[in-house]
Image (cartoon, rainbow, N blue to C red; front, top):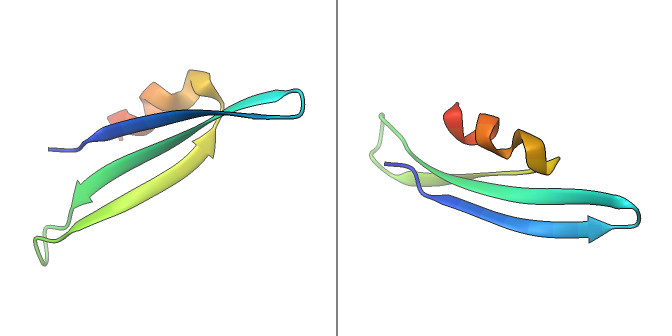
Length: 49
């Protein structure tokens, strides 16, 4: 099960969100974190992958 985390960032006139998704590796069983900074409207699409 993936865990969601979203933080709002403001840089200049742009509003950005940093999304962190925890993904379990099928090969080793270890968890890794995938981070991305994006437009807040694209956060849900990031977590659906």
